[in-house]
Length: 62
Image (cartoon, rainbow, N blue to C red; front, side):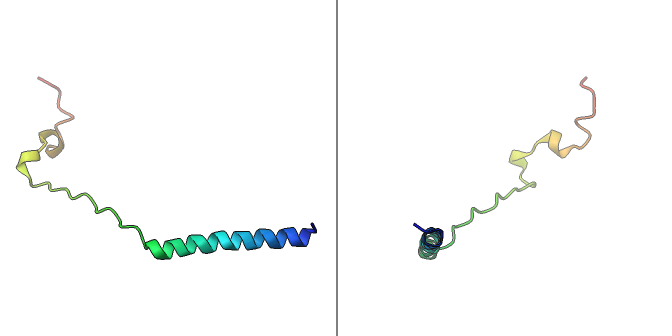
């Protein structure tokens, strides 16, 4: 095979692979993003005193 024939075959194969990938992407559509995790700092049930008190980590234990 000549170099030009090999290069043409490679480029056609590459175009076919990208074409198929594009087609699959169009059929399946965009992925559904996962929703962001909601955090509620006002919830007393899940309160963390060390987290709520900025000086809690700097005090020596008594």
